[in-house]
Amino acid sequence: PSSRPSLLPSDSPIISRTTSPLPTDCIDDASWKSGSSEPVFSGVSCRYIGTDTLWCEALIADRKYDNFGKTVADACCTCAGYEVASVAPSTVATGVPSPVLTLAPSEIMSMIPSASPSNDPATDASLSPSTDLTSRPSTAPSLQCSEEASDEFFFRMSPTNQQPIIRNCGWLQARGNKLSLCADYQEGGNDGIGIYFSPAREVCRNSCRTCDLTFAPAVTPRPSEASAIPSSQPSLLPSD
Figure (cartoon, rainbow, N blue to C red):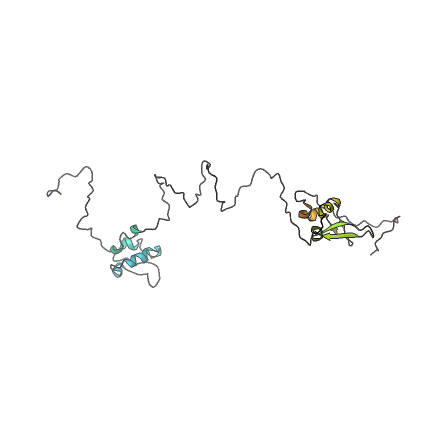
């Protein structure tokens, strides 16, 4: 370096490649103390910290210890520049995009939709359900095809006493000719006390293989009113 300084300022700054032998003086903020109300880390001053950088690590780890608008790194010379040496990545996104593209894909999903579709299909399912309804109705109705062994259906009238026979899906599942039974007996009917039961093809859909069929709702017949004219055919069931 020149022994005589120039009287004219330089047109452009020159960065020195050597460290100054006289460091810049740093003065602690004597009025600063750490915030919060915890008994150990609150009220700690720069003088108390001294040269123990462990205090810097503890007080910078939680911003609740900031006080008077300053962190311990701002107030105390021992901790000055301590935040710069952090090896953990920043959790706050910068407002200016990086001009250099990263080669590794981001593990955080973007909240902004892409302006153009991706050429590669996604391999991961969406974490949240879609809130948009489709504008086209489904051409195939959704059917809940299930049966329980205890589900009962109207089988047929007994040929001997004309009494209704009520069976369940468990009985039908054990029959080797269940598909024929489902096809031959397609009418529902009432039991002995007037309760209506649907046929097997509507109750035992898995056994009858009728999951893809849609049935009209059953209409329960109402008991007929008493007629003033006696019937020419007597009833087989006793009167209540």
